[in-house]
Length: 252
Image (tube, rainbow, N blue to C red; front, side, top):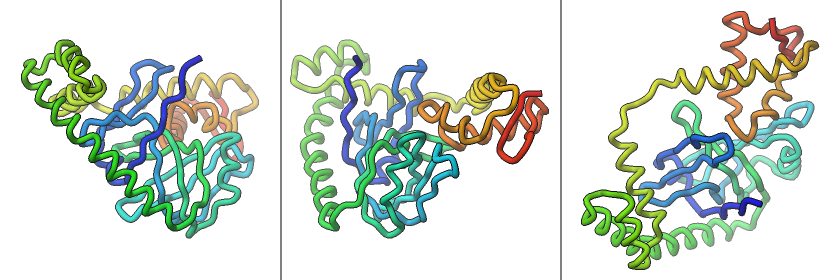
């Protein structure tokens, strides 16, 4: 059984300023690399709910907008997780844990936990972030020195870092940040086409039609709601599917 990746406390501006990395394989996790070279698979935030929580009629999908005083972010929930929003109201201060996603350059969260907390939690959260940064900074400086002295070669740099008590993940993050900075922008079309293909195959499974909420729920762990909705719109526009009734789609 695969070990659950622990969450890391972040401010929302750290999330938005970070580099999002999409998993290359279906069963790998997406992650964020922060500006100070931390790999984050699951984020823990404390923020205020600034929109009325929305849950679809069939409870397959929900969303909420969060603001921590530095930035805002959209949080989504799917399937049984929509129950998390039942006790959440606009204006609540909440602690939330979720996986980071990106859609058209915008970072989002797929929420795994969210609950109201005492106002003091915000101060505690920020103090914990400052403490983590203070502990991380000397390790980052050592990792940067090692990476540079090893000619920016990942394998020897990681081996040396391990020998000197520096987590190899920091060296990996530095190497990935360098690669991402040099990598030319790729067109979004390749990912869009992949989402369209998977959505179309799923719709095809039910000749009587597939509800939008069911489509969103099916791909909740892989794609953002915006990616899925965009795929459905494109499939409609090119005539691959039609809307038999409101929010029920059938393959042509």
